Length: 274
Image 1 (spheres, one colour):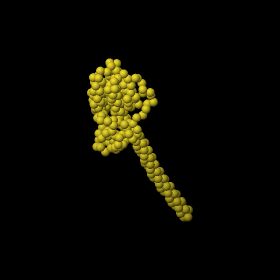
Image 2 (image 1 turned 60 degrees about the vertical axis):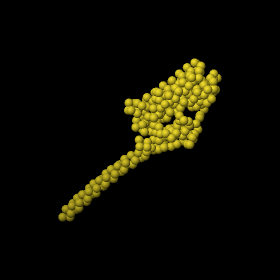
Image 3 (image 1 turned 180 degrees about the vertical axis):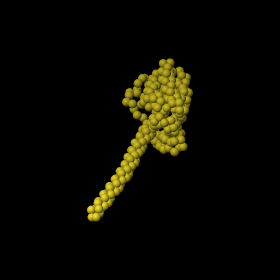
Image 4 (image 1 turned 90 degrees about the horizontal axis):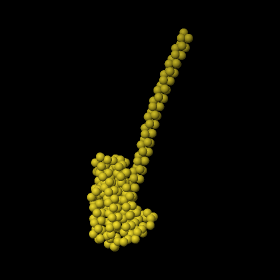
């Protein structure tokens, strides 16, 4: 009888131990699952925070570049303030201006070259016209820089390329408006042609007319290429990345400097002075 009771007690103890062990294993599994779930969610959250910080920093850098390029931009009527606005089509973006006269960051930067160049054989009136042509060409380069930066900022996204705008002397401009100004026979090329016609009317020497005319035509052609690439991106026939590859403002500035030298002017790389 005693032996039977001991046997029953032993079995009961064994069953209890097995049950406790099973419960312990289940608790461990549940805890491990919860820990893994929390760890995954925590890692994902950290990753989201990191990506958000990188995205914001990159966007801030791009916007700073846009703002810096706009400094010193001149409107057809003269110098004016500039700013940028990145929106989503409903004017909900951020707007910034560079100052009352657009000179917050400084306007002219010397390119370190000797700009005295050639001695001018033009009359004072002709020199004034050629200088105006050079500065209008530099203006084309500034607009090309802005268009190119908008294209870079968009990272190939056509909607961002369309909706990114900046305030230019009180006027809101976007990629479409700039492309319209730069297109063949558009506003900027028409201004250059009008000035060139005025130079012809003064009876300037043929060699001067030929050099200035060739350079002006090259500038207008490069501007039209930038415009065409932008128009294709705006109509889904192309990509903003093509605008970046096609637009060469440095080349336009170089051609403008060559025009400036024709008049014996001093060119800083972004502006021609007499």
